[in-house]
Image (cartoon, rainbow, N blue to C red; front, side, top):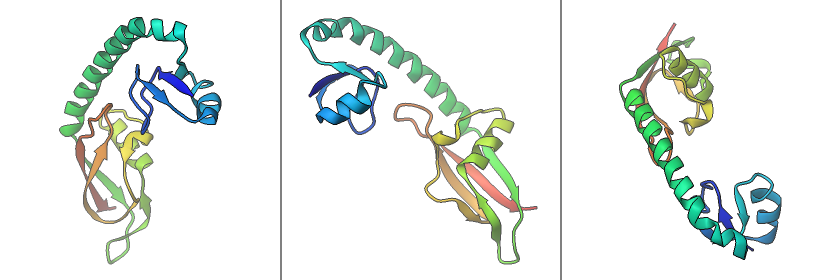
Length: 147
């Protein structure tokens, strides 16, 4: 099945592209979520108009992502946590904790944009990437200290 993407879909394509997908994926995932439309004659003709709209939206989101990235690059967090004698934490610092600390620092982000591969379980300094939008992912420094 051929579809025209209305939004960027990770590992599939960018908005405005015509891609070939499995019938079930298109019918059960892309079309109901309005991420794509079928690539028929009528939709292909309206694709040019949609591309201009998509480009304007991409420019706007790129501008907001760049401003967020510049704000994030100047932030360094210090998160207090309870720890044992050897520096091992009681619990862990997760993406939710980092997102809350960023919100208190004046840069609100969604916890899903914090790219933390594994929870932090030791005291120390860490570099954590935050997905700002598009392909921008600035690193912030996170220091986990004992309470």
